[in-house]
Length: 627
Image (cartoon, rainbow, N blue to C red; front, side, top):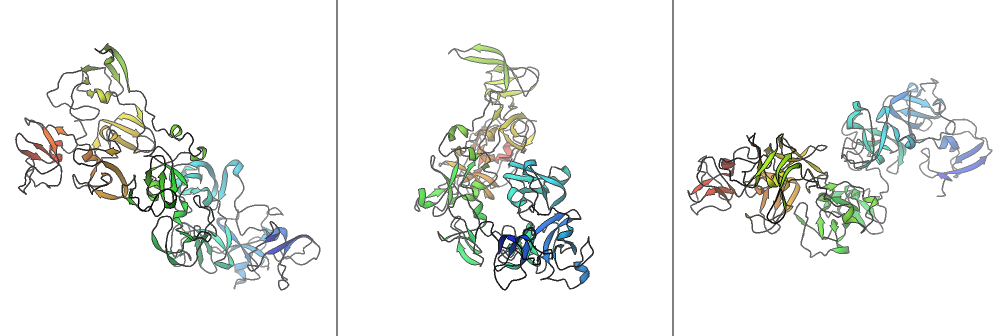
């Protein structure tokens, strides 16, 4: 098709109209019913004498907004080929006449406007959405009261009003607080055409419709491609009850990780996705050149991304490039086995491997501008996660140690109103540190006026730090909160992200991502999953556990941070954390609550007194709170 010389028009779905710049025939325009002299679009086939158009009439948009009917968009309609049964239903709201010319119509309200009654500029040089990119605004059909504002790099993860998927990147949103986040869109979803022709429904044009604001009966709103009724933007023919979701209406799909565009396979088949490896029944997207079938959802995977728990970007990789089918690999985000025959995210520098869905998960993904970062250049420096600051205190007094090092003997810490002095003396009344809420032991700082204690290590904690569990820098605070790793209440020090309301207590902030624990002979790696996993130590189920790649052992943060030794009230001896039953009697009870113990669960034990007890009975209901 010659560029700009042919036009596929809604009045003729069989063949395009041809452009003639200087026509003098005087035929009647099919659109406005007036004589044509000048630029024209016409059908080159001899049997189509009706298909002559002014250039401006041929280029009318399929849908538009009009101030006389702001509630719904209007769709272009040809009264000659689809004449309403009742004359009153086709009457124009301005001229009050029923004429056989092109008309903009709202099928929901029986509202009509002839194209000559619109009051638009003669050449109709406009788009379905006004071109207001210079002002970074867009008047969208979902909000007729005020325009949407453009943000080029949004990272909030809100749900798109159009496709119902999370938003990261170019975004349109309504700045009016009364509209809240319901009017947030991907740039592509905000700029979809109000009307289109589609090869699955060539008889009539389709108009954009929002199922959330114009609800139809479930069967009438079912998409003809995916056969589902979802609350997302849909192209609809009101004359035929024909619907296509905006994601299902795509005729050609460009993907980052493949060299060729993909086309939808309109017939439902059983297929195995060449990206995720899952067998499915439905309508895949196809690359005919490569015989490449994928799910529509898999087409959205980026070629490269960054996860919080790894310092380098990850690249989407096919097994044939860098991995072998025989490789026994684990995803280092969920610690579940990966199938190397299909695609995954991989760091060639560190041999870091992750499932596609694990890497794309908003809990794991770090949103930074990778477009400005060239492959292999300065990645370590650009993506350095070390943002730790100096300790959170001012030194009041210093002494010089035996080896010449300076020791702060008196400090003013941000968490306490009085000065704190360093001591090496033992404490005999089971005092706890106000930072980590663990038993105090020398060396520590204390307040002469208050019952306030800080381990020297807790006093030296940095005021800010970057942690592998969270994408933003965290700030040290003393507050009462609930830790997002162990889910326990804490009133000591926490690292907090104010924008995300994420809190991490001191003990959990010090746990490494790859854990070596006395309770298990193998290394444990943090597994973060969408489903809950059982802790081998206590039986609780959590999304975050430290999992062994060699066996089915796993522990949660609460058990990973249990103190190895502790004291209980006035008991004479300390208790030691034990991992296996104390004997082979087969009957195990807690000496505090007198209830039966699970022999597979960890417990505290005093060997001197042969005194076993549940961990919760020794530590209490709130082990991370100082009362």
